[in-house]
Length: 260
Image (cartoon, rainbow, N blue to C red; front, side, top):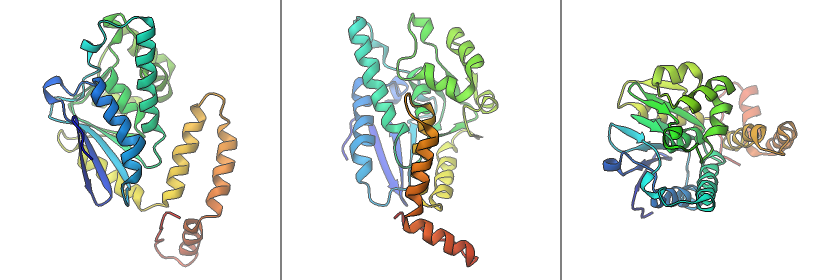
């Protein structure tokens, strides 16, 4: 897998994807967005034995400090809508990815960076991490799903405040609000994310993918999350993993799931 702005390290079934635009604080330019789309939409699906993905940014200063504003200055209404639409489509690939994706947030996660972190299933923040949606400072609003996912994640009242004031919050406040799952010492975000993925990897892979699918259904327009749960439960009942899990429970042993 050859990428210009991403590096991929696969170890023990866990892919660590690092955005490498450190001089630009890992800002999301068009090339980086296209590469994220290619990885989650094509390449990752073909990685043998993939258990999950850790997404992080290069360096100590930023996970992703935002979108690349230099690409915004000539946009008109149609161009802006097209950019937002493409960005949302790429972030949906992450949110709907059938293996767990954990954002390891090191430093700033602002604007598109905060939106990218929220598209991941789980988030681990270093103690120096900072989150925010500062688009109103530029006369804009979030375009990659930020107005929707921030409300889904922390609730309408606080989301409204952060979106309209452009205030940044630190890691501990993000933890209190439910924006992140864990806060770790700076520099240990990736290891904690790997630890989470290894824990999840011990569970039934098909069931984990169905959890992602059904939880997402709760938020999808026109979807009936309860019906999605019914269908997913039924699908799990006919898997080899269910037979193994039930047998292991009754026999008081550790299950050995095969993802089938």
